[in-house]
Image 1 (cartoon, rainbow, N blue to C red):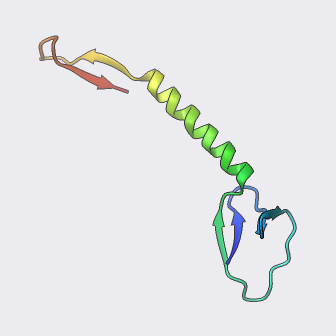
Image 2: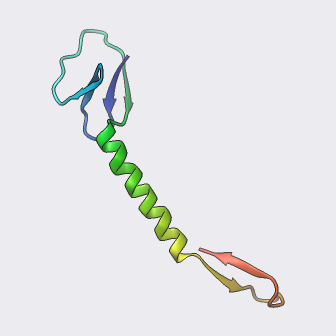
Length: 73
């Protein structure tokens, strides 16, 4: 099965990723990430996760004593 990057549309050909590729008739295709796009996506996900962690704060919930707190994001 031939793998196409779902972001940049490069095609995996052995251990290389090519921008131009001629598909054979009835060639089976699947989608994934090339190594470059995978690194970019993972960096964005890690940054988003860090941003969410920084925004999370602990605030007292109404109607509860101060020893019980709720995590709000």
